Amino acid sequence: MDLQQLSYFVAIAEEESFTRAAAREHVVQSTVSSAISRLEAELGQQLLTRTPRAARPTEAGMLLLRRARSMLSEATAVQEELAALQGPVAGTVTIGCPLSTGSLNLGRVLHEMRRVLPLVDVRLRVPETANDWNLSSLLDGEFDLALLPKPSSIPQAVQATPVGTLSLVLTTAAGSEEPDRPWSVAEAAAAATVDFPPSWPNRRRTDAYFAQNRTERNVLFEVADVASAIEMIRAGLGAAFLPESLISGWAGIRTVELARAIPSRTLVLAQRSIPQRPAVKAFSDLVIARVAEGVGQACGPAQNSIAPNDR
Image (tube, rainbow, N blue to C red; front, top):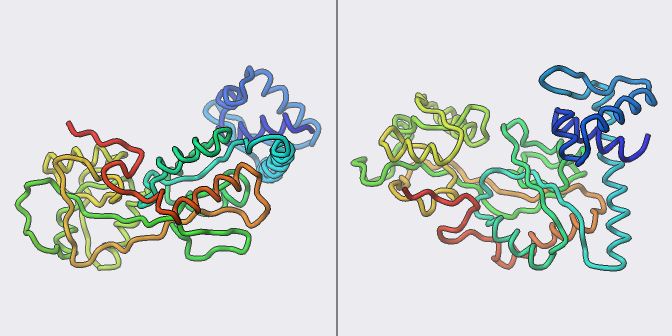
């Protein structure tokens, strides 16, 4: 068993595909397949279940996956620490990140990072469902860092630093004739017919908001991106709860004041409570320092990385 085999195995487990794993590792698929066959033979265990559509870890594979990520991370740490003795910090940082980072202007922070840490590469991964917003991906080494809503409980193995706030606002068409006063929960429920799929974190927040206020609503239009939601709103098909940081600068919409708003959540930067690789520590320190200085705070229409489409 060698590090290259482990790297191929982790790539397959994360990509769920030999083809995508080979592309990620910059080798031909036969090289990856041969390496995994040798690894399974050496360990005497089937590590992957293979179907025409996907390759997923077996129970033995999941155990190896956790260990393999740790071993690869340690090997990378040694390389980075030795390199740092002779030159600037270099390496790759993988971050689990929501679509909207709220008041944290991640684009501005990344731009600053390019200036002060030019040899550090950042990979952002956006979890698709609310179920993915837990700390397991951080603890098992899939992510080096995670930006996420502050969990209800934080284990001792994790350090979580507040870096922003996440706010949802009710958005409707500009120029609509709704009453110019705070809306009740019932009025919001009647209007909010546009939303995201039920598994999305923001949809779960809005569903919980209405459930806590014992109010039912009927979602007529489910969309998979903010731009489509805004098009529905502009067309007068309903209102929607959207991340406040993503709607600045869009024409044809306005926010509505609520008598009972959805409470904002704290965005935290989470990392394992262990000595970090130089690249991870440098990036984490940069984010925390720039937020403290106000450099990473959103302001004006450029407060997020998704550009408005003002057709």
